[in-house]
Image (cartoon, rainbow, N blue to C red; front, side, top):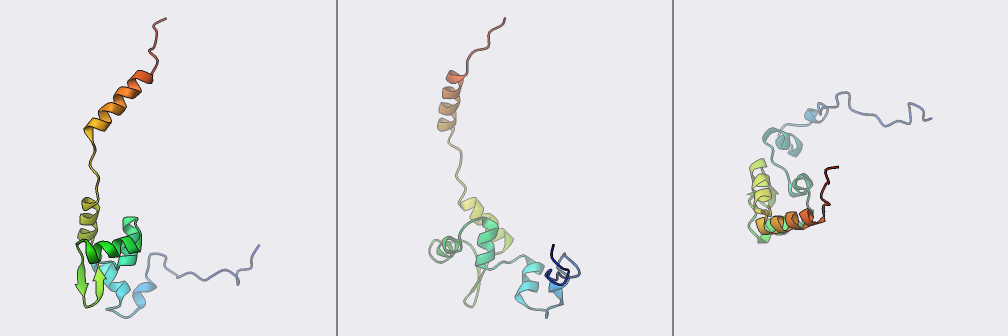
Length: 111
């Protein structure tokens, strides 16, 4: 059992009130207010790697906002990237799968 002194101290308010005490205009306050994220946090939100996302921003035309050398992704940018990377269903493959599964199922006998 650990002593109370050894436990790490947590902010008094768990919903981020301690972070809002920082100076206005800091990156953290800006991200909360308007939803823009830097590439490393946007990659985590999208569920992809930071390098993959940066390659998409720099070489493949993924939508983003550039302020100087900084890149920012709005919620709309992230939604558009998700839409761009969506793989549509292939009806022919689905039909073949259903047909092969129907052959495998044994017919129920009425006894």
